[in-house]
Length: 375
Image 1 (cartoon, rainbow, N blue to C red):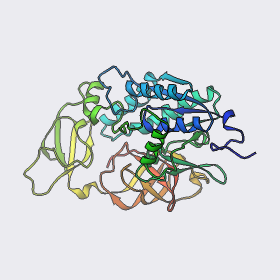
Image 2 (image 1 turned 135 degrees about the vertical axis):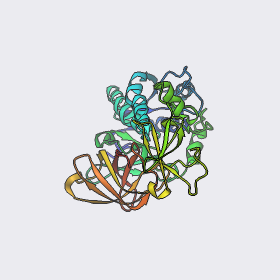
Image 3 (image 1 turned 90 degrees about the vertical axis):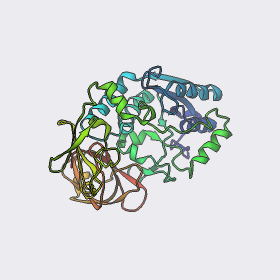
Image 4 (image 1 turned 30 degrees about the horizontal axis):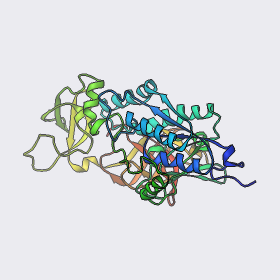
């Protein structure tokens, strides 16, 4: 018997799939498509924080409006839908670490931790408990059946590719997950499908911010979570000379040039380090931002060969979600640690960012890790 579109050798009607529904157009289209193909679809939406609190806003991925929208799609199409309260899990696994990491002068990426610790861990276990054959999401990334195991690949549309945020997907999770939108050439195709199925979210705007950070105001959220975190301190150069005062380390990011309040200097200065312990913002010339060697830990490896089977791996790596992968050499130093040598130095590399690995040519994602030491 031939396999169905999700890779199972049985009819769609006998294949149960849990769809992680955020309330946005992407996951709604996934649910509608699979339902139209005759699959046994169950929609699940996570309530990740108190959407009645001050953090709620339109444009966030998990606010009350989004839960309503997901439920409405399920009701319109006629498949079961459940809302799971994961507030405590989300706070402990994502928000608390976000606050600690930011206060330590790092640049955290909480969406990756949410995928890793909540969506692809607890939610995936819920899907198994529901006897689902697989779990599908609206992420723009591709899963290919490789010669020896399932492979992770970048989305067909580079502008929508979300591989940076999904590098920590383990091989076991990848075997169970499906990403039905990864092959689409543009977001316009997704919206056209939403219109075709008469979905109320067809024209809903994409979420832009981190769901628990209204209007991108990190500092306000940190101050609420950690009173006193905005204590003022000194702005110093790389030699330790005091150049001015700042209004709290949490208001600054590596690479920042504007808003430092230390004008009148011959050459522009940039934030090159955040010393949270001593409440110091360290500034220096642009060349002080250039980084060539990047230490990485907590590596998730998705290669066919064991990670430590080679002394070095030619790779392309991505340190920011907004930049294309760049050539690098990956040198393992342990089962989950490595040094990444960037063939072209990059500015503004910061602890807390992800470093995602890609094959030298092609679309395959080989995993990645977390940058962990200051510069």
